[in-house]
Image 1 (tube, each protein chain N blue to C red):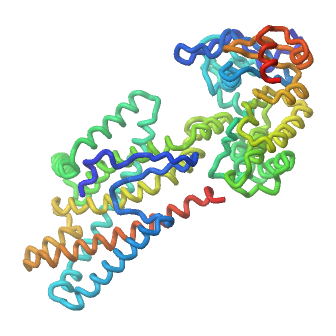
Image 2 (image 1 turned 135 degrees about the vertical axis):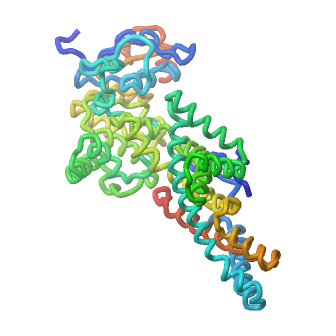
Image 3 (image 1 turned 180 degrees about the horizontal axis):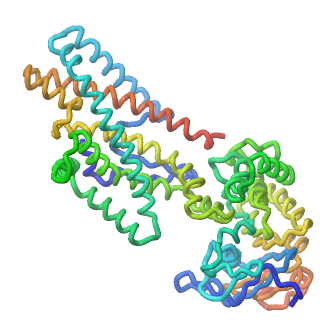
Length: 246
Length: 276
């Protein structure tokens, strides 16, 4: 273990959907600045795990701490914790009734009481970063999928989170749009953002991840560096999975 | 007629196009859809016919048509007063009921559901009488107030179902995105869900408005001088029953035709962010 406490600390988490065991005694630590890519077959619980980190899913047992705060404790204000956790969804989920700019400024203005001018300046800077500045006054429906997802990343960044969670951010995109989103994520990773990414993009995992977490049937099977995972996987099930997809 | 008795009026039709959910309502007047040429022309024919009759009949046969046209309009104001106040109150009750119906709090949920069940099971006319006389036992209120309370009590339940369906029609991803940014449930409802649901809710609310306007004819029984009551008073004196009710029907038709057009325009304006 590191001398520094991990910023995300998941310990012995179990989660059921009815009688189906979605998470099976999952433990996982993520350090500040670390990039963890979670992969695995569909139904392996990777999205569920990601969603428990900001309590979009509750858990049945175990603990999850963010920055030392137990997020499932009734004493913690989950909304405060969520402000520090940016999340990007598979289906973008931009607010359809707001322009791109408003999508970015809404949370800082309402939740952080940031002056409108300042929030707009921050938003413009972020839109420039994700290379979509010229669409600031458009509505989400007027954008392509790749553009919407880049706006969604910028929206999450507008709250200046400590951690970014990505839930299959490119799975709903046409192939030619996947790279523009992955490029933005790669830049973010280079800047030192702590990231947990659920994805099927093995190239991204290989290039960006500090650690690859392989999940199967609700359990973490293996946590290795990309080098080890892709070249000499430690587990039979990881090996089989890689053989299927590569 | 007594729209409140039918509980199958409101249903959500989920079109294949991901979020083009529309709540279609089978009562009220048909709201013209700009893309539906047939309905637009039906609307025009009805309007031109109604207006022509309203002008020609009093010109050709001033007695009794012109006399009726002069006698009845006092009632239009009353009808509108009852309708507008009832719909405003019904929207407030409906919003609360709709939120109650989706609430995770069991007690609130039960109260809201019970209210809807009870109101749906009792004919509007019976409710009108009941509230009128029940209120009369406690406090003496003007007839028009009793009528408004009764109408909004009934329509609030239907409005509640409209709000519930409208809120449910918004993709859950919107809620999750809002929560993930740090908004709480209440803020999510106020900033993200309701502003979007309003667009889905408006057409059925408009329809309820028109249905309510027509149902206000029932309050003529409670000694409220609305359009119908004025007509009955005129007919009772002059014995021109046929002519009177012809004019009454034309006046109602004229009003509902205009309203349906206004609502159709409002609906179009409100969906600006859905256009590419």
